[in-house]
Length: 271
Image (cartoon, rainbow, N blue to C red; front, side):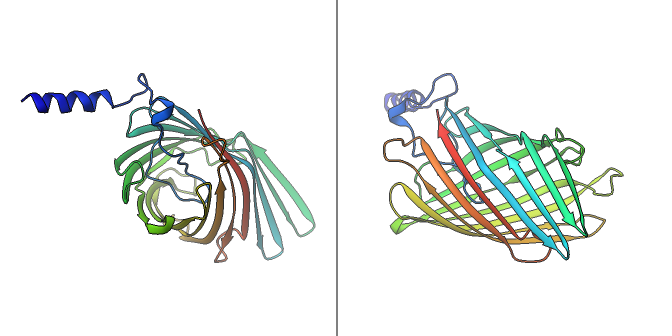
């Protein structure tokens, strides 16, 4: 019986929480949900904060003679490590600006964006294990202004799975199901499904390049929409600052319903 009690005590001693933070020398490698659209199964170390944000984000789209430019003034996500396997996240858009040009006219809309609240629960493989899995339920609070948001509460769940291979290759698969508000504005929700297939390669201990395919299928009663894009991203962490990451990337629409090109630069910092 004594060995069992000792093992349980040792496990409890090495389990960290919000009120018993993981010490700096026990932190896992920095893990973020950027760049690209994929979500990693890994959670933030208990008792620590992490900021992940766009510095620049612009989307360009052309439909016939009409062009639409969407700009985000940052887009921070703040994470808080609750336990070794659970973190809480909040994402906001301080200002979103949409400019539509066509047929000799120009219109501009802007305002505060919606707020996303998430919990990420790592079920398997929270460090450098060969396989990782997590569940990420989320709720969108309709904090966006009427000019940039749909004023509706929405939600869903993401279930990222990761596979780590030799020579610093990794694969992330992100299935997602959402309940989105009907675009007719008459109330009610409909199903939306999305998925990401993301392949990454660590070119050095501090630099990683990623390529992915993303798709989204919206079953809105007003008309079904299918989005498809090919995305490229890269991330670099300075050798002297293992808790800091810079990243950037481009997303390219692959059909006429998807915005033509999106470019962004971002930064992440663990505290």
